[in-house]
Every structure is written in C-alpha cells, then in structure tokens.
Length: 267
Image (cartoon, rainbow, N blue to C red; front, side, top):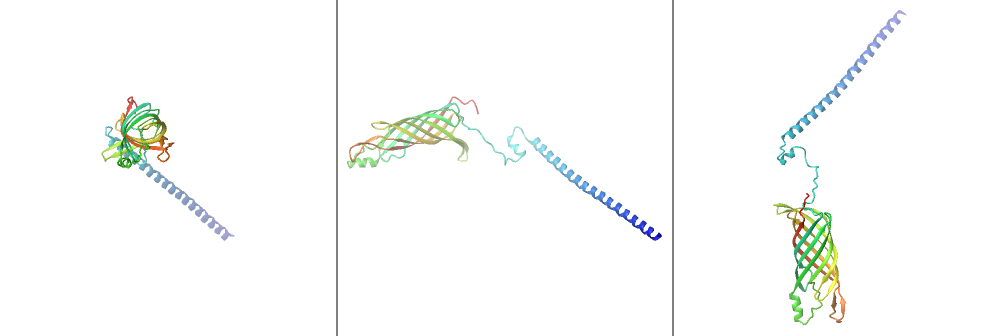
C-alpha cells in the first residue's frame, strides 16, 4: 500500500508539471503571434506616413504660375479631358460665301458662287437657306458632237438653285496642321429641298450633302461642302422628239468662308 501511494503521488506531480508547461507554452506562443501583428501594423503605418510626406512635399513644390509642374501630383494615365466646342454656335447666325464647281457634268463645265444664311438653335441642329448661281461652258466633247450635227439642246445644265435645309453637326474634334498648329473642326450633314433652274425651266428639287468647318476664330471658319441635287427636268427626246422627264442629279463642290454673329459671350 505504501508503494502504491508513493507511485500515485509521483504520477500526480508529473501530470501537474506537464499541464503547467503546456499552459506556459501556449501563453508564450500567443504573445509571439500578437507581436507579429503589432510589427506588421507598425510597418504599414510607417509606409502610409512616408507616402503622405512625399505627397505633401510634391504639392509644396508646385508653382501655381507654372502649369507644367502639375505633373508632379499624380499620373494622368486614367484622366480623360472632354472639352466643349471651340467655335460656339448656339443661338448664332452663320453667313457663308463660297466658290462652287460641278463634278459630274460630262458635257459642260459648271462654275459658280454660293451664298448661305443659317441659324443654329443648339450646337448640333440648325437651319440654312442657300442660293447658288452657275455659269457653264462647253467641254471639248460637246463641241465635237455639235460639229457632227448632234443636237446638245437636250443636255440639262444647272443655272441656279434656291433651297432650304436642316443642318446637323454631330461630330467635332481637332486636327494637326503640318505639325505646327491644332485646328478645331465641325462636321455637318444637310437635308433639304428647293427649286432648280435650268436653261429654260424651273423644277422642284431636293438635296443632300455634308462638309466640314475649320475654325479660325470664334467668329470665322473655312468651310467646304459636297452637295447632291435631284430633280426631273423636261427634255426633248432625240429619238422621238417627244417631251419627257429625265432624272437629273448634279454634284457640286464648294469652298469658302463662314462668319458667325452675334459675338459669342460664352466659352
């Protein structure tokens, strides 16, 4: 019995020692983990403070009178700049004068001049009145036909055109001119109707077109247009001598200047 008590006492003492050692080990390990977290937070805090100091230093180096130093703030790779139109048109009139040339008449050279007066309700939409006058001269092929007794009276030649159109300007941007300057431009489209005059008659017509205006200032631009007129004049058939209607289309190119008024008080 005495030996059993001694053995039991020894086992109890050893068990208590093991439990105490495990508890201390767990407490020590927990402290180590906590210290690792503390060290990590400390490093992150130091990094943030260092970054903030650099940012403040860059801001202090910026010269308010020199915009070129703004690059020191942050990279601009993700910044998009959307600018308004350089040449404002809302609630302004546009007066245009241009020289014109016919492009698709195989028998006559058509040269002329054009006048336009428009009003822009908003930047993209406006209305426009047009008046075009043309002179014509015979091409070599026409003179050759006449020398062979071929009548050319049935060939339709435009003399003038009066019309009105809706002007839509959905596209604008900038182009580089000879790497020397940046020129703002607007691209427009036209749809309208009017009256075409030939050598001996006036007939209803409609037209489509488009072009560009390159801004020289907020009150003037260089403008070019392509205009296609459709109409049905009456001609005398060379075969039956009967009067018939012919589908006619005239393609014109124009180049000139536009002036805008009143003076823009915005932008």
